[in-house]
Length: 303
Image (tube, rainbow, N blue to C red; front, side):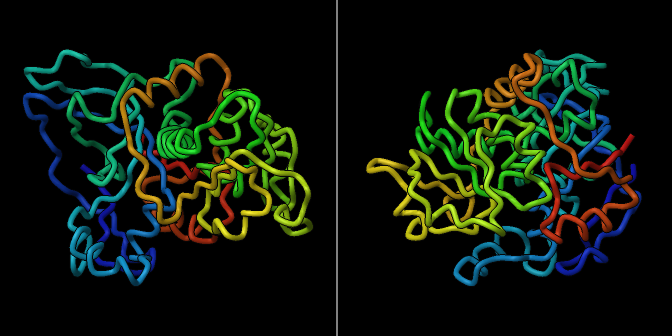
């Protein structure tokens, strides 16, 4: 099968399309023919090995000393079950699924095997494979941190970095929880986040939300650029500040994928896709994601 391998840490040019052995499912696994995947900020960080100095050595030991131990990157996918292991009962051949591979990676390829009890479930019926692939990473991350902030109906919630994969999911999920949402993003994305349901939008190039009188129950930094101290004066007395930076990896659960599937199928949420690339163009996709200007997800068409 074709797969994109990260041959060493470095620029996007270290990514090379190669032929590698097609995997075979074990007795408790499904073989998925991948139709679509994405390039996330996480993929870019691993490929370039962008790690804080404090975590440099443990991360190098975990990911691989000279190059990624798991050279096929990619953490989310959508596709079709092609084969099932003899003990698999949740899925059958031909099922459309969407999934997260997490730190196993492996989604930048034509096929992958996942455990039936892994972070995989049937894909939402009302979206394409490309759209389905754009949901898991941003959706589960946003869900994790909003819950960490103890989101409740009627709260005032601010999403900083509201136009990325995590931010666009967070705006929609915060509206699902029936909160008043203020979305902070750049000037070119104001209409996008309004269309996702934000009650108020703030152009960070023109206004500093930390210098206003409005106070929030939750401030969610979806891009890891704020600090608790910077936000303290606009948090309510028992308000929560949560950020994707330095607060641990979002816990991935199959039940959350099923929750997101329900939100998508009911029309309460929609995937946001900025650009499409082919598998052969993964390097170009990395270059674009690395600019920090993407809106929603960058999708790779495999089939």
